[in-house]
Length: 304
Image (cartoon, rainbow, N blue to C red; front, side):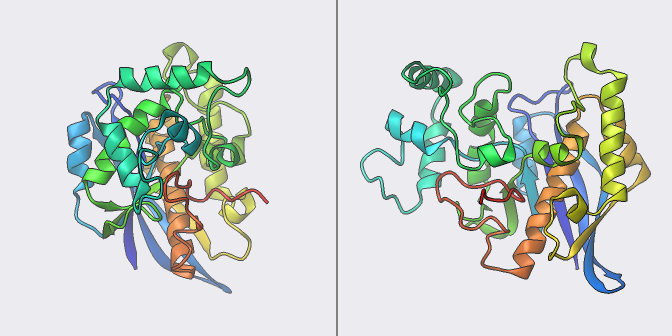
């Protein structure tokens, strides 16, 4: 079994300087004494410098599974307060996520920011933003945040393209079963290893030796320790062994923006989801139960 696995570090305004970075990996079965195991080999990276190139890339023939580093939906609480679909008319829509995303696609960024400001201004200090249930356990920013980082703009640019491409999003959209998109968040895996150490920056003044060392330490931990030891996999799961070609590892280490490393972390999270789906086809890639509007982040456990 060789299944292409992709990890996508997304940009809402890609360019030559700041492209969308796609990690290309292969999930394969291996033999390990005493237990079933799988390997995930990182082969290399692609750079997509426009959103049009990203849309074209999504049409790549399957089978493949991708982990995408952007929120797939805005929070339910915000959508209800704004009276945006699916909370216009029939709140029990059969397909709430596609209806929500189609509406967001009709809006300009200025429309989004105006609605977000209105919501936040009506909220008490310390509770300005609405959150999805998956945000807190992942350590992710709320998906309606439009600055530092502007993840709402990433959702606005990315989610409609997933919908238009006809991909299958477990729990959200029953599209092409040969092309599967999972929401990923590389910061979750990075913090399991580094805690709060910073390993990347787009600011050249902050691209220092300490962050370079943090990237090296993160890569070394992924090489030397199992994902069970790191905490991404449960002890009862088949082990996933990670491999990198030398050029791919060097790119992860030497890219001070962290985009290549983040793409690799997204691919690892997606592969963990695939193994959980293989072990339990009803698990929705280990994310079940998936809220049909807000979704869930692959490999992130639910709070007890």
